[in-house]
Length: 512
Image (tube, rainbow, N blue to C red; front, side):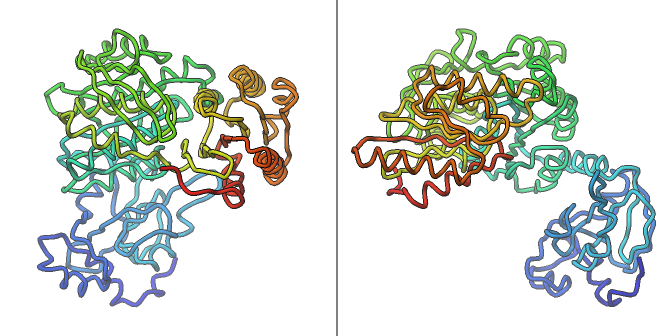
């Protein structure tokens, strides 16, 4: 790559990303950096190079400190003043975009091969691992009161969002955004920690063993939660036992900072793997264990869950004292997500009066059991993702509503050799629970209608499936009968297309 495509005076600006102590005011920052959204937080080369085991392989053109104020792995979203990390994958090589990154204002580049660069370049053996190393180092520089790690086969995203709704009311809180819960997303989230953050909630997902072990060693949590383990992502783990062991890896990150062994493990007594996790925590020397569920072994117990038109009501018995809770979300499983959240929040030192408002104001996560009124009844949009356990939970929610029921299901992914039998089991479960219509899409669902019975149908397009839903809704509406619909499927099934089409034609005022 040549070094003559950027004016020399602009290079000086790029490399003049200054730490707070060098910037007297926001106005001066804007003048120095030449941008309106200048931030006072930054890292320097002296932070980066030793903590990624790197070496500087290009010259520094400025006498002022070379600083960067964000980290990017994608030139499409890179902001001026960023560190650009050139990742390599099976289908891409970030080194091909270094020139583009510099043109967009990258202040430093992190590479795993020797390049010619007009901005400082730091060479490492593996840029993915270097991203993790830098994130781990940065996490240790930030004095958060509590960093919470969350994993589980089902409910981890909802629980993460519920925790955020609770903690942000008592302090500045960082939480994982979207699906940034993997080997790239977790370090990127950790690098968003700032001195003002009091709490951090880090979601961790995995599709193979040892991934959560790696992630928890980066995040070094104070509290680690497993919501549950079920037969999700069997393709990557081979068996439920493999999933149980993978989720248990999250506890390896506890008690890794300082001499005080105050790390807390939070587990579900009702979940497969409960006893395995108890043994794992013992083997790791973790002495603080908080249990939630319906078992008498649980310190935080869920009971009396009921569903209303406005959400769920239930009791939480917290170490012998009962509290009534009302939440404006659907699904009995959300009572267990609330119990998990309470276990974490109490472990972090919050009081019940600080926790309850966050529970009662939580309205769920987009695409996760979102209830919307339609002209015939209710649409439950749970299209974000699916595995056997979450589909069964959705069906249980659907059939509790008064009226006829339609399950629109897209194929569940990552089930490997168990795919056909898992889909057939769902069809049988839907029939046994009293679902009236089963409309399915995706190759893996083709055998489901034969198991379900007469009112089960397979469709080869979202459009054809929706058109059949519309016919049923119009028939039932003419007969003044209530119909409720659950739309669910793995991300690859794109079942949100069906939800959108239903709402476009049959939407009513939102439920209150």
